[in-house]
Length: 171
Figure 1 (tube, helix red, strand yellow):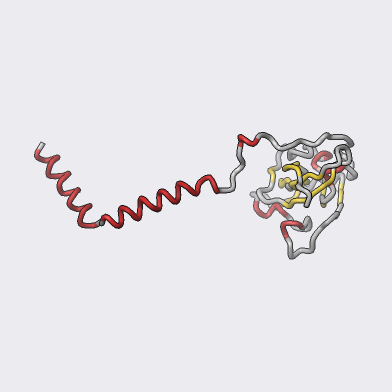
Figure 2 (tube, rainbow, N blue to C red):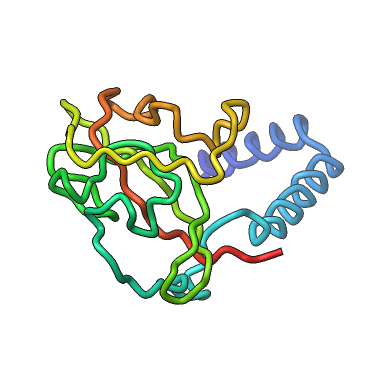
């Protein structure tokens, strides 16, 4: 037992020589402030429920479909995927551009995330280029003229999805 007593005594003296009460208070204060700021972080809250889903009407394989108001590329609906998912063998890009499209059925505007699907080849069918409210290239988050596959493992563009993120708030 004398060995453990000596070991803990040396450890305690070592900590006491290298630290101070002010340092301890500083660490506790940082932990309290850091812990209090966690609810301020931008995260999706599960308790808020699912975002409002629009009433779907029309042909998702048509360029005139309401979700495609800011799309520029091949529609995944024609390439083996859907407007929400990529075709097999491709991966969804990690970066995206957004647009706001009005659903003619309910008259509400929805925020649409346009994700490119990246793979080994281009789809080549159902080319759709609708540039409603497109911004110049200095606003890259609003532009559809960029190859968004640059953040993925494959740089080859295949097709584009149109995923509803939520309801757009009118100003």
